[in-house]
Amino acid sequence: MLCLNNEFTGALIHGTEIVWLPFPRYDSSPVFAKLLDEERGGSFLVEGEVESQSYLVPNVVETKLKGGGEVVDLLLRGEHALVRKIRAPNPLKMKVNVTFNYGRDKAKVQRLAKGIYKFSNPENSEFLELHILFPEMDEETWTVSGEGYVFLGHFSDDRFGIYGKDVKFDLSRGFERTIYYWRSQLKRGKSRGKVAKLELSGLSGEELLNAYDTSVGVLLGLLYNPTGAIVAAPTTSLPEIEGGSRNWDYRFAWVRDSAIVADALISAGYLTEARRILDFFSRMVSFTTKPFLYPLYAVDGSVPPKEVEIPWLSGYLNSRPVRVGNAAAAQLQLDLEGFFMDALHKYFVATGDTNYVRGHLDVIEYIADWVSENWKLEDVGIWEERGVRAHYTHSKVMMWVALDRAGKIMKSLDRENRWRDSRNELREWINENLVKERFLKKPGSEEVDAALLTLPLYDFVEVTDQRFLNTLSEVERRLVVKGQVKRYERDFLGEAKYPFTLASLWLARVYLRLGRMEESAKIVSGILEATGGTYLVGEHIDPDRKQFTGNFPQAFAQANLILTLREMANATVGDAEE
Image 1 (cartoon, rainbow, N blue to C red):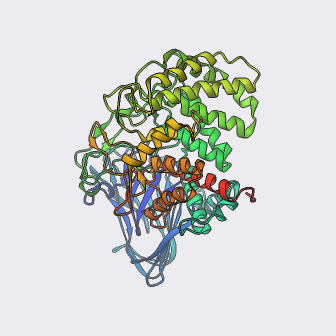
Image 2 (tube, rainbow, N blue to C red; image 1 turned 60 degrees about the vertical axis):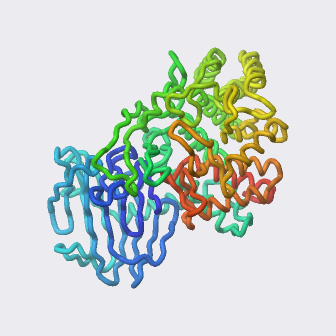
Image 3 (cartoon, helix red, strand yellow; image 1 turned 90 degrees about the vertical axis):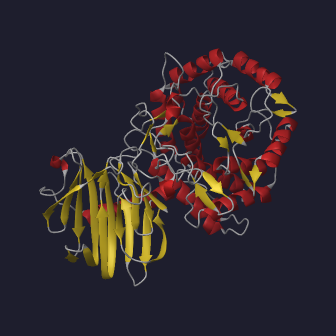
């Protein structure tokens, strides 16, 4: 499957069929949800046998059909609309099945004029307009010939539709401007020249550059334009394990994931977009309690809805339940402030923008004050263990990161660092309680935690620290499966079956810092092989089938792929032109 994004919402396309598309935004109910139910979900199919399919530019999919046909799909920039440009030297039939309320309600269909249709929900509170703009069309069979466009736009009210308006509707211009926008976005970044010079594990520089560019395009497309929030993934309930219950809604903005994305965007030269993410979460800070009271937020900044199950959907490959909302919003997670502060500090280092940082001193100081006063709390940790609180080492280290980065920012501004003693006390506590020849997952635990791979990545220890090397050895011995890394061995739902892409990329970056380039390259090669040439990266990876599982594509995985490729390029290409 390939993904379309337009900074408002995202669609998944399987062959020539749109199988997932929420309107008007990522966390809305989908109008096409066949991804989660073959019978009830609804889809938009252009019949034809696929010969080849790839990204024309990021977020624009070009599909060539046998017999000479072609379909180019995109979501219009600045609008809640899907456009399909179709070239049909031979007649092509279309099937459009719109549903509302997660597939529960069939759309009411009304013909407005030749080639123009209206799809309404039962309450008439939202509708879609479908415009089929072709020189030849059989309205009985919805078969088109020649070259033309199909426009599907979402509107909340009849007054805002396109049909019957006096203003000219120039679809071709909007289509071409969207392509131009995504092509021009790539040219703004840096390190593309370095990445293109890489060659590793049978992958050419061109392939690695395509992976890099696709990852950048995914992240830019997932950035919700009105607010600067970035969703973790554009989907809900794609299962970690086929037929299992590890099915979650990821269409929200996690503080942690977003900070990782900001880090990658800063690294790749997209400072404006990274700043928008930081601005969004700066506005989310609470000054009466924990700074990030919620681990995740809706894209408009509100608290995500209560997690509910959608019983009438069968789920992807019959994997129930389908969930909407995410109960993790109510969890206490103590690593969030550290991720945010690290990204903010990296932005400051990259830009030297003292005015920006001074404008956020209230946020910086409050976060550091709160962490210094509350680091002894227990939490559920980065892996969101439901109902299991503890002193997780990773959380404690990220709280140390929050204090450390606050101090560094203050030093750069010639201001007092009043958290130095708290930072040092926290480090001593970690060393006394969470180390036993190696770093532990939590006090007294013999479990292995892949999150501990981040300790040198966030400068808590040197990568050559013997305690970390001992930790690394345990990760390699107990969590590595066919070259990829599981998060842990077991959690509150039982055994962890598949490796976690983010953890695998952490290991790749650790190997780079240890000079183990070949081992790092093998990890990246294994991940890219699983993309099947699409370069879209999922949450988990099945190393046997070489396929991803879980929600897709995953923002923090694409972000860490960018970071890994840049670090590889810096290590091997050096000072080549950006």
